[in-house]
Image (cartoon, rainbow, N blue to C red; front, side, top):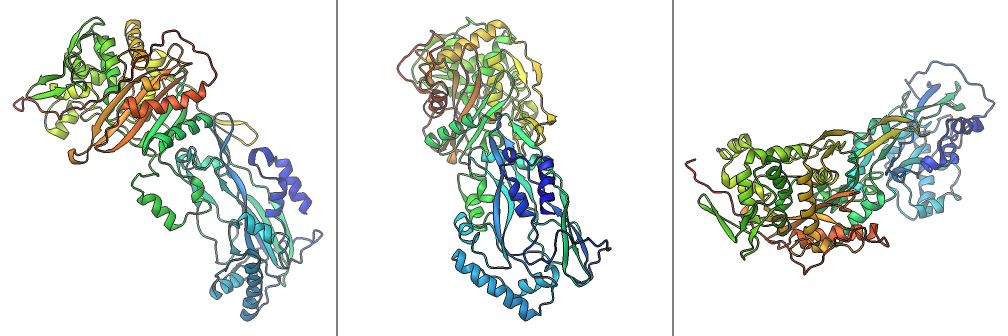
Length: 639
C-alpha cells in the first residue's frame, strides 16, 4: 500500500526540482501511523461513516493539503516555495480504550522523553490531552510544532515508540527580505482542530496569502486537495489507510522581477537611505524589473506564524517597514516634473526650443515671490539649458505661458493621477490637481500661482515612484505607453501556461521628434553637462540620462523632503527606466542630486561593470547639487 502511494505521487509528477521536496517527503507525510494494527493486506470495510462517538466511526476520508505553487522571478529563480517542517506528535494505540488516567500517563511519559531530547519544556494541559484523545485519538497529537534543525537532528533517530516527527510542508522565502513586500506572506487559515474528526477535514491546517502576490494569486497558488482514507473495524482497530487521490500542486506565478536587480536596488537603499524607494522598468515593454522600498521586512517572520511581539514591533516602527513605498506612497515630484512641463510647452507650441526666459533669482507672481534654487542670475536660457540647470524661475514663466490645462493634460497622458494597474493591493493613485480638485479642496480654481508651483512639481501634485518610472519609460522609448506588468504568466507545475499577461501598448502619445530631441539632450546634460544637477549619477561605461528633483511636503512645522532622480539608460538605446526616491526627515537638507542620484549610480555601476562606454558624448564638470525651495501658493484672492 505504501509503495502504491509513492507510485501515485510519482505518476502525478511531484517534481523534486519544482518544489524542492523529495518524493520521500510525501511518503513520510502520508505514512501509516505508528502503533496502527493495519496491514497492507487488510480488506477495507465499506461501512457508512458515523461520528456520534469515536468507537462508532469506521471510515474517514481526510483531505491532504496540496503543496502551494511557487512564485519566481522572470528567470525562474524562486521567490516563494515550500520546505519541510517537522512537528513532534504522539500516536495513540488503537483501539482507543484508555481511561483518562491511562491517557494522561501515556502522554506525560512521551512528553518527558521529548523534553529531554529537544532540551526545552513543553507545556500542554491535561484538558488538551484528554480532549484530543476522546475526540480525535485516531489522529497524531502534536506536542511541538516547527522543530528547529538542531531539535529535529536530536529526535529523528531517538524517538521512543508511539512518537513521530511528523513532516508537513510550509512556506519559505529563500531570499529573505529581498522583494518581501512584493511577494508578501501567508498565514494559517485556522488553529489545529480539537473537535471530533470530520470527513474532509485537512490533515493539517492550510495557509492562505495575507499580503502581496501571495494574497492576489491565492486561489491559483493553493492547488487541489488529495484524499486519504482511514478504515477501522468494529472494535476500533485501524484496518487500512490509503491515499485515494493525490493532491495537485498549486500553479506557479512567474513575475517580471529580476532578482539580481531587485537585490541591488534594496542594497542601494539600505546603504544610502533611511526611507525610500527605487523602481526600474523595461521601457520597451513595461516590465517591472525592480520594485524596491526601504525599510522592508523578511516574510519568513510570518512562517509558520508571527509572534504578537514581533508583529507589534513591525507595526510600531516609525519608519513603517510594512509600507511598500514604491507603489503605496505618493510624493510631490519636484523638478522631475519639469520633463512633463517641457513636453506640454513644446507640444502645445507655447514655447519654442530657442525661446529664452530669464533665469532670475526670484519672480513676483500675484502678491507672492517665487524663488529659484540658485541665488545668482543665470541669464536668458532656452529649454535645454533650463532643464539642465533646473531653473525654477524659467519654468514658472514657461508653465504660466503654457497654461495649467495643457500641463495637466500631458501629466494624465503620461500616467500620473491613475493607478498603474499592478496586481497588488493598495496601489496609490497619486494626484494631478485640476480646477475641480482645487475648488473642492481650496475653494477656488487653479490660479497662476498654482500653475507656477505645479511647473516645478510642488503644491498639491502627488506621484508614486512606480508612476514616475512608468513615465520615464514612455519618454525613453519615444512615446509608447505600455501597460505596466509585474506578472508574466501563471503556469502549472509541469510548465503549461494557465494565464498569460501579454505585453500591451495602451496608447502612443505621438510626441514630435523635435520635442524628443530636446528632452533627450536635456536629460543627458543633467547628468553629464557642465551645469547639470546629477553628476553623481554619471558612470564611466554607460551614458545615463535623468532629472533630479527636490520637493517639500507635509505641515510647515513638520515639513519633510522628497529627493528624486528619474530617467533612463543607456541614453541612446534605453534598456532601463528608473525612479529613485529618498524620503528625508523633517528639516533634512538632502537633494535629488546628492541623495537619489548616487543610488542609481550604485545599481548600474554593478550592472555595467566591465563594459565599454557606448557613447562619446559624456562631459564631466564640477559637481552641483540642486537646492531649491518653493513658496506656498498665494495670489490675488479677489480672482
